[in-house]
Structures are given as structure tokens and as C-alpha cells.
Amino acid sequence: MIRIWDTENGTQVQELRRGADPADVYCLSFDPSSKYVSCSSDKGTIHIFAIKGDLTQSVANNKGADMNGQSQSMDERAPAQDSSVPVSNTKSFFSMFGSVLPKYFSSEWSLAQCRLKDAHVICAIKDKSLISVSLEGFYYLAEFDPKTGRDCTNLT
Image 1 (tube, helix red, strand yellow):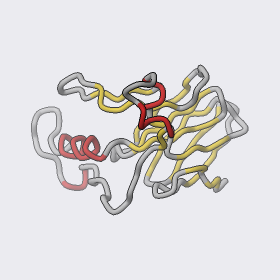
Image 2 (cartoon, helix red, strand yellow):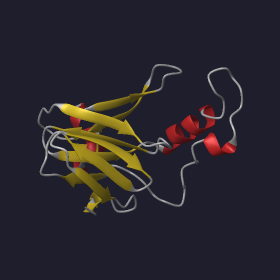
Image 3 (tube, helix red, strand yellow):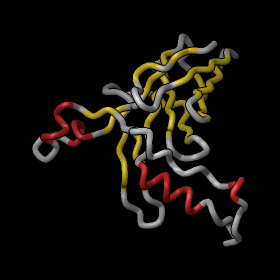
């Protein structure tokens, strides 16, 4: 389970689930614009989750000033989320009964997945590309469609 917190007020804003069984997570990585987070584990699957739109806008606004409060150039800022792309994670069919069922059923599941033959990988997202490198030295490049999600298309 991955939980995303608002660091300004300490509240949990999103709960993401990569699977039902326990796993060792090897890598957790946000893309440069904070629209997506990827997670690789010992199961040989990389999951890609969409970050809620209001969070990505908040991050983009906060990147407008550096640690000293000085304004950064527009080139250094993260692009705002493209509102024309309907991005959302999968939810359980039972999420509509979230008030009476355990919290497990109201968690968000991954938007897209990529299955690899190597289990131990680190991963990163840039635009709609998923880049991963395995402990064994293999390089993988895949694309995902933020509109439809599902399985990634391996390019290598």
C-alpha cells in the first residue's frame, strides 16, 4: 500500500494499492511533473498510479519558488496537468460500499502495469514512458496510455 500525504497539513490525500498480497517494494518514483508515481516490487510488475489533479497543481505551484523563496524561471517549473486527459486509477467494484466494507475496497488500484521477466528493477517515468533497469543489467522501455491505462506496451 502506498499512501500520499499533504506535507503542509499532514493529512492523507490518496491511498494506492499495488496488489493484494505482501511484496517487497524496490522502487517508488514520481515523474517530474508529479502526475504519476511508479512502484516496482519483487513480483516482477511495475505499477503506475495517477496522482490526483489537485495535488499535481499544488506541486506545480509550489515549484514556482525555490528553497529561499526566490522565483524560478518558467522552464524550471513542472507543467500543469493536462485537463483534457481523463486520468484515474482503477477502483474496486465494491468501492461504492466503502462506508460499510473494510477500507481495502475503497483503495485505488494502478492505472497501468508493466510485467517484466526480471523482478528486481528500479523505474522512472517521463511523459508517457516507463524506463526501468534491472539488477541483472537489462534496460526496459515501455509506454502507457493515460486515457485507457491497462498494460504498458514494451518498446525494448
